[in-house]
Image 1 (tube, one colour):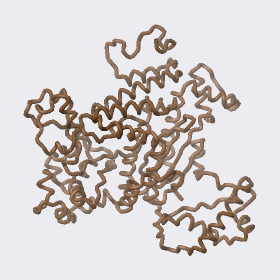
Image 2 (cartoon, helix red, strand yellow):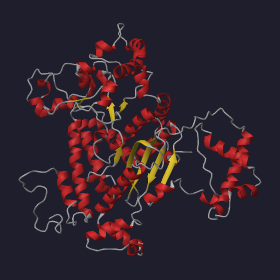
Image 3 (cartoon, helix red, strand yellow):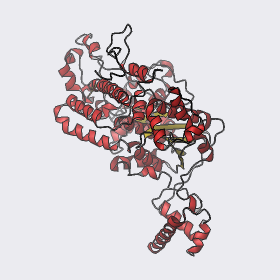
Image 4 (cartoon, one colour):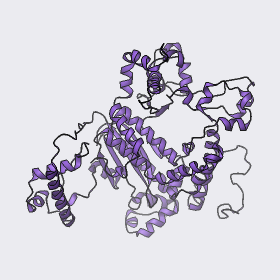
Length: 571
């Protein structure tokens, strides 16, 4: 019998008959959040619950993926009678989903890949974020965390008792209830955001938008990476790589100068009495030359930089805000972001950093199993995902409970703007198709494009971009003061017809995609240039940073995320 200490009578498991059936997720949530904390205290049960829940979610994702129809079948007439058996469904299903069908499985590489594109969509519309904030967990120093866990075991501890604990004793208490430890971090983070960062005091400016993700350290504790957009934030102009480039001899002098100073810094970094002026005087280096050398080394790639003036003893201290540090009571890093290019390169690197290895494994598995067919390939990928991921107890809690692994101020909506024959559409469930007449062609679920075509006459004049940003799938107008953000498929201008079609689809009002968007000569290009003056303001609204954004995204797609760019967001 599994878990005999948790189920001593072998009853009331998930498969137990109940008057009112409950889902697997709700069952496990009730168990680990129960006032009887024996389930929450069992790490083995947490890992079991997390595995069972994710296996169910993966199976659901696989079922949905098999209903995603290849684009070319949408321009042909297909009836319900033609696909009323499983083999026909498999014939239509997409075979190029790789591991992306796991997108709705929290914590999977595909889940965070979607986060990457959400962030790129925010950067494209809102511009570069102003601050990048990292918040670490100090669960060994947060006395209230251990006190709360102890209270669940009927032990009341004073601050002094917690302070006098050894590292091993604190670790033991945290392992006693990882559920409370994880929930306590999330509760602290939500209060920190609502009362301080987004509060009336505005310690780092008036925050307009934010997006964060939770990542887990090697020791298993969570920490938070966050992008923050500040209202009316100052911008640093783009440095031109051709301006004030020193000759090779001067570059050599600068390199030797900075090397000498860095070598000395290692000897004096713990001496608070040593100043930068004294250090430069020791090497007989003029401060103006040192600043030129430092500016050159930081901006030689053509990107702007922020140089912080500090004493030698402070050179290895993270950038921080005293106000945020006092409130958070743990290590944090606050960096000013210089431009869109640096922001995109960093975002790509930090989002893919922890999941890159597993993502590469899943890509390799999907490639090797592709000849067996899409279903077999996705089943193989599912098994590999469920058995090749290291998860800490607190991460298992985050993935099992509805604790947010990502959170933001806005929703990002993805629109398929490619040609109709290249798009993917979702077939209706098989039980619905079985009830249709054999000659019925209404086989696909309605998406945003179909809902836009059926919009009421009173909003005839609005474009697809405005419709999607201000309306939800439930046909209810978005009540947020800020519209949702859009993310469209990245189409190469070197394939002009697809590129011009996507712009017309987004910004020119239409009812029939073919009749309203094609020019008389059968091209989208001529129609685009004829209509562009009428919608250029909407295009500029949704794509204000398009040139710099496109350059960075093209480099990202060609070369992949730069290694460890996350360590030098603001040079």
